[in-house]
Each structure stands twice: as C-alpha cells, then as structure tokens.
Image (cartoon, rainbow, N blue to C red; front, side, top):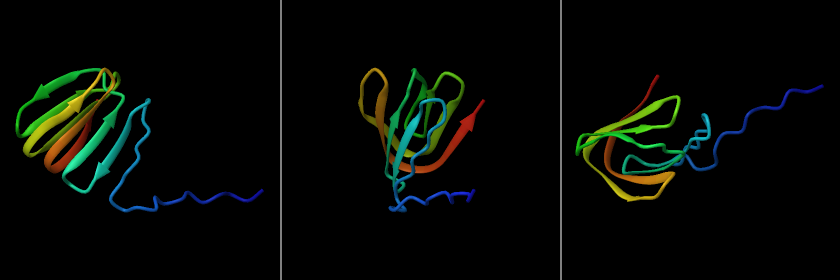
Length: 87
C-alpha cells in the first residue's frame, strides 16, 4: 500500500491549524481568524491570549485588537510578530 504525501496549502499566506477543534486562518502578519475560542485570558495592544480548553494561544505584536467576536470565534487584527502555544 502506498503512503500518501501530505499536501501543502495552495496559498502561502493562509495557514489552517486543527488542534482540539481550533481552526486558525492566518492572513499575512496583519489578521488572524480564530475559531474554537473558549475565552480571552489577556487582552492589550501588545498581547492577546486565547483559551482553547487545553491550550492557550498567545499572539504578540503591535496595535493588536479584536475586530469582531462571537461565542466561539474572533478576528484579531494588527501587526502580529509571534504566535505561541502555551500548555
């Protein structure tokens, strides 16, 4: 039986990350569409930390803000310099 190769995303500026029901679409370094949020842990203009249940996802940068938000998803905008998974 042949092993199938993993496919690379067709658009280099969008990353799909499926960890514990979390879906993150990263558009360059200016915007993230984050689905699977269970709450905001920290929020200021340099750092946004999102609870996913098992992990905390930390976004660092400048001028960060939440453009829109509902019960399970949100859009983070600004100049994003790093994304970190914290256990």
